[in-house]
Amino acid sequence: MLNAKVKELLNQQVNKEFYSAYLYLDFSNYYEARGLDGFANWYKIQAMEERDHALLFYQYLHNNNETVTLEAIDKPDKVFTCDMDPLKAGLEHEEYVTSLINGIYAAAYEVKDFRTMQFLDWFVKEQGEEETNANDLISKMELFGSDPKSLYMLNSELAARVYNAPSLVL
Image 1 (tube, rainbow, N blue to C red):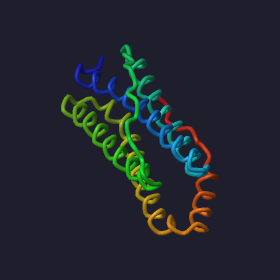
Image 2: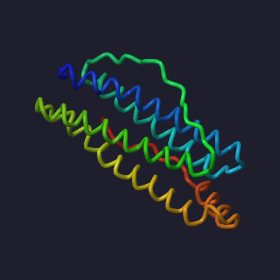
Image 3: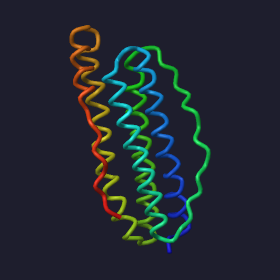
């Protein structure tokens, strides 16, 4: 049986991950409207990853005989004025999600919930990768975004991204 605080934080994370998916679909929508299908693809795949992260937390709670409470998903409220805006908002959001994962880990550590800590280890590593990817996109856009040919090549690179479902077994 999970500690009440750990259970609450895990349940909140289910909803936060679904919000992340919704947010990234909004980013994808922005880039579709701008004609940047590669950027749109990149964020659609991000949305799929976040959805699957939510389902991993969902399944973990069920595997521990806990009920999941699904809350309403807030509408993303970001307003973008240039193509860099979603990229910076993405990094900011990933840093926020990292803080949430760290908070759950700290709560599990406090009550010596080693099973939950082990479950979260994958997410800790994943968040490091997410922040690196977000930083890399910003760097590439800073370098190439103002040149149409370079932006076309970057867009083409992002269009080639395919989704790989997480291999984490619960």
